[in-house]
Amino acid sequence: MPEPERRDSVGLKALGEVIERLRSECGLSQADLASAIERDAQSVAAIERGEEEPRWGDLRRISSSVDVELPELLEAAEERERELEAAEE
Image (tube, rainbow, N blue to C red; front, side):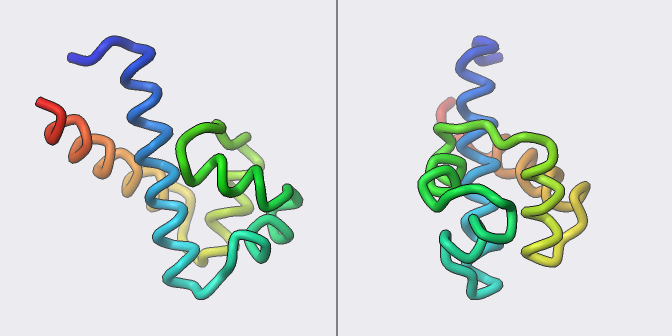
């Protein structure tokens, strides 16, 4: 099992990838999503790169903006995290 810090890093990367995919599928730019979640585009970019952990309110607004229930977004991120971890082994 990866070290906790590494696991968190992989988890944030996975979450960011899922958010980026869903945003793109909805035809939203980073600026569009940033406006919807009341953050700036640089913050959205950092979240999508897994460099910034989104706040709980951000996650709720992101899920609403991409028309996905929050549990579904989190499940997709967990699945992507498992894929990334398996690829590292």
